[in-house]
Amino acid sequence: MTRRVELSGWGRWPRVLCTVASPARPEAVAPTLAALPSAIPRGLGRSYGDAALNAAGVISCRRLDRMIRFDPGTGLLEAEAGVTLDAVIAAFLPRGFFPAVTPGTRFVTIGGAIAADVHGKNHHRDGSFADHVAWFDLLCPDGELRRCSPQSNPELFRATPGAMGLTGTILTAAIRLRRVETGWIMQRTIVAPDLDAAIAAFEANLDATYSVAWIDCLAGGARRGRSLVYLGEHATRDDLPPARRARPFEIPHRRPRRVPLDAPAVALNRLTVGLFNAAYFRAGSRRSGPELVDWARYFHPLDSLLDWNRIYGRRGFAQYQCALPLATAREGLSALLGAIAASGLGSFLAVLKRFGPGAPDRPLSFPIEGYTLALDFPVSAAALRLMDRLDAITREAGGRLYLAKDSRMTPETLKAGYGPALDRFRALRAAQEGPGRMTSALAQRLGL
Ligand SMILES: Cc1cc2nc3c(=O)[nH]c(=O)nc-3n(C[C@H](O)[C@H](O)[C@H](O)COP(=O)(O)OP(=O)(O)OC[C@H]3O[C@@H](n4cnc5c(N)ncnc54)[C@H](O)[C@@H]3O)c2cc1C
Figure 1 (cartoon, rainbow, N blue to C red):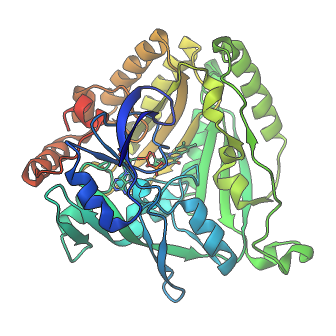
Figure 2: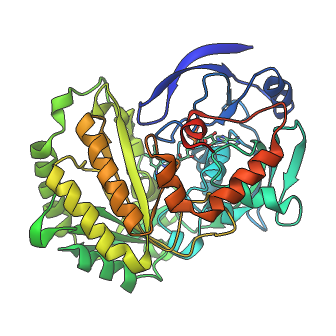
């Protein structure tokens, strides 16, 4: 059974009227796929743009939400693709396990996390999500279900992470969780007055398990790139105050709040964002010494505000996330920040991370060794023009954009960023064609 539903990504732009099927069991996906002219799988729709949209067919994986097996000796969890990281944490943190890699929201599915090969604040140490996947079962466009692992169908095992659902539908997967002693993170804040200081802080702390910076994208002149760099380590039981040691996984309960309505378009402007950024930087600058922060606040601060995407107003927003190679990152970031500050269009959610070596054998996996900058722009003609300028700077620096965040890049920018790997991916896709054709609005826009 299918429904016609208007869908979007997290940015709420673009919106597409889609035919949506929601199979309840993995065995039901193949017949569902065969009945649609084309399809793309969808998890929780937390990718920002058009990756999980396809007018002719969307396979919602939300009902594939069963956990199958867990081995506490190895931390290996087998689960259906629609299981969320939220559910994984709820079930396994009390037993001392946490996802090895988590993006900035826990409301993502395992299928979506593999398809985007998501990264966390520990990419420089632990790589991306697919580095912790032992195998997955992929329903391919020819209708065959293939077990993909380093030994079995290795080409598909490598091509699927980053491929945004285009190689097939992941039905089940085995992911490795990491052991933790508590649900707390020992956080240290480094105040970086400019971009050079921020980069120096990342480089001096490559052995920190987690690192991420909030960056003031509107600060200009000598303060360009001023940041608060947050370092984190999983706290041990001994790090906790005595009163918490008996229940080390229990964290304060916060009732999530909801944004009740779309903010008016004028709410976010240079003045309001500039004031917010200055106040946030001042408050962060007063922090000193290590502090204990619970896992939810450290990894997923935005999840406490449900529907926060409504603060950008009815027209929606686009996220710009690029990765720049180490050698050109400083110049490139400085040019990007200069263009953003001059435009006055930046958002208060601007994030900088250090990537470790990427995975060149995964053709469309986003991370490359260097720096990644992510920030949001409410959709407007001026913001779209600015992002075109940012593309030119990213390309000049030899960088690339993240497909999971994208809603507007051109095929030329994709080609410049991913190079010959893109041709390899297209050849694999062409060889894969079958009656269950996989495509999406993103694939059509970019000729993937
Ligand atoms: C607040 C916020 C913070 C974020 N922070 C980060 C971050 O720090 N790092 C990062 O890397 N990403 C981050 N993201 C992006 C997010 O992690 C990815 O877009 C992720 O793919 C979303 O998962 P999903 O289940 O919602 O998938 P969807 O958005 O529904 O789909 C994403 C892609 O996965 C494919 N897909 C979904 N299920 C399957 C399946 N079963 N088989 C095959 N393909 C499938 C879809 O076709 C689509 O191409 C963030 C997003 C938000 C909203």
